[in-house]
Length: 107
Length: 525
Image (cartoon, rainbow over all chains, first blue to last red; front, side, top):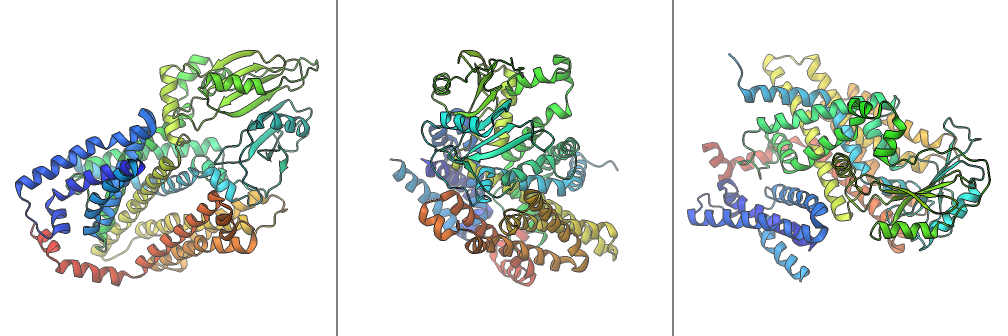
């Protein structure tokens, strides 16, 4: 559950990030994003961010959970932003690997 | 021409940030260290064994206090916890030499016997320093820190207004590109941890509000500070002894009563007034790590009959609860290991934000000076102070830890000398840039900090029995984790020193990226 609390905002941020031309190119080497794909990435990103408080609330209740969520948003965004320039593909791959691993560990 | 709103805000951001940046960096970094206050204290007292607290420790500790402090009118027992596994007690001793007549000791969490350890302020020093500073009256210091925090709040808000590409640059960090990298780093550290920065600055102001804005409380309590403290902080009212001896009631049932009222929560502190007297009272305070709100909940019992006299903090009024939650958020004592790690990370981001802000200011002044063809005194002063404030503080913190390990255990005034050496090291860092200019000063101080932190685990191996070889094998995770953390800090400082020392590498990387399609596309934007 702890990993999922980090993985959901990380995946959400990565999807939003890939919907931006500069970062799309950084990761995938193409600057152009098909409009459909961009919409899909944005939608997925916001949905993941919307779902991201759930593991935190499950871990620590309303009070502690909301503080934990803010901390997790920060940690996820920092991890993504600081790893992007050094290992863009790895950073993007983590967005798939972390939630998968988190689901396995949480189940 | 009248400057636009954004320009005015940029001006405000620059100047409000710079004026207090150096103090803020120290407050942020030592405040971040204060999240690890019990861990630092334990590491700095390598003599103390880590044992799990016994189940019925309260009666043992009460017996120990009766032996330790006969004739004392006042005891206070801080119960052992998982993070700080010894009982910390203090009591008033009419014969004690120091001014307020308090003595203190650490007691074994299972047997209640007195533990001896080297004298040190431990993590308490960083905690105190981050709002009381040192070598000055705490009241003056708190005014200074409050004013700086106010400027910080102004700098944060004006910074948000000034930063016109918050969302477009949300994930943007471009290393190895000189000033642009510093600006990216400043924005990343600021924006991504923004909820934390706003929270910690605002709640920091709230913790000191009774000092900076006392009028409401003065009016409501008509200057009766004791009544106010009793209401707000749950301090038990002082009672005079009756002069008739009477035995203290057993503590066991009182602790059970407390657990029942607090949904199974444990007792964090036991305060006894007039033990052995007919008017004895026993106050139990709830463990503060179990709720966010820092409104202490306490129960006051008659010390001879065990009858409950009063309960405070159970139904806090909205304003008191608001303050309690803000205070609780600031000190983060409710946080488990995971959340504490996130608080540490955010605190470090805050330190980086302030440091990069100060550095950016100097970089910009340097550029303007280069245009004018003359580097003024102001530019040199800011550059000089930047080195001492930013690279010098880790050196001072490292020196504090080295002093803890190297000063003789029986030395007179030992705890104070650790602190003197902290400031002596910092003072030398303030002088050092006079001899070594610019980049050289940065590299040398960062490198020294890296050595001081990185070699501490090795020093541990030489002078204590609590080195990694033993702590890891024994499962003493607090001390082992701390040593590993010191190694990591040493490594990080070394990496920064290395990056600062090799601007040519950074330049080459910038050229390489300039040749990449990404940079050309950006240039075309």
